[in-house]
Image 1: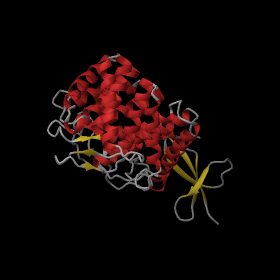
Image 2: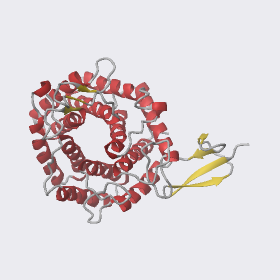
Image 3: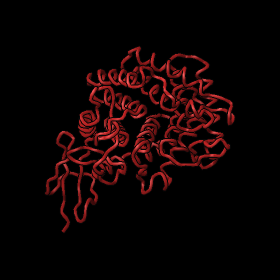
Image 4: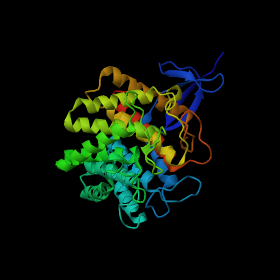
Length: 384
């Protein structure tokens, strides 16, 4: 006879007890002959993971979050930009004022660690920070965030050229390599800035970059998203498939649809989402793939963020929305029960496997984004 293991939440940490379960929960195999039933409390777990992440990864000078939990204190710009986004998620969910102070401290800390300026060599890095700063402004109305965003956007636009027919370059020292990670955030940012500031040039930039990205790095019909073009200066496509590139094209189409109400943009976002969740390379068995640690550890979180925004778009059909909700639910349940160490609360790059001894901050961030997305959808009554 198989044992039944009831999983309960204690401040977000799973504690197991063997016994019978009288209420209906999700039931599935765990290890060997054990069956677990789980009452998923994503908000409680998100709170606990956030507290542990802050404790483990915050630098000794409290300016930024370090590379990993094994003593590497290197500052990396782009994951810290995403941590600002996660803090916004947490503030929106909890309304806890501590996150307001933490957001401001992180913005200042990133600048301090980056030679006391916001711009850096990577156009995609600047895009991530500009996006998270703009979201922080949305919830706090603190002008420091729009000032940072404006500085970053002014610098980013210098990376747009006619090389390869248009688009924004990846870095200042390799401006002729054009890729999805640089253009996707730029499109999303330009569309959001237009809605806030009503500068026509921002809308035109968003449309132009989108047209270039779709015609250059999106495979017609299949909506396969390529990583970039002209990496070696020979005009060839870099056909690497990364989860975050799909998320970015979803976000780009969605934001232009919100801005213009032109249906083709939303249709592109929906087709991209459907292509991604049905791709056995990107989501084998319905779980977003393990893309390693380092930069790749953060890719899945970006995809989850923009798929969640697509779920929240009222003009998405009920059929498509249900598919996306089920996809996030399956990934979140899998991470909840299999991909988080306890009591350490470190997150695995493979959401269906326990983490090893070393966890990169990037990897931790992706899991946090998934937990916040699941909490948001469950609290809204969208995810059961």
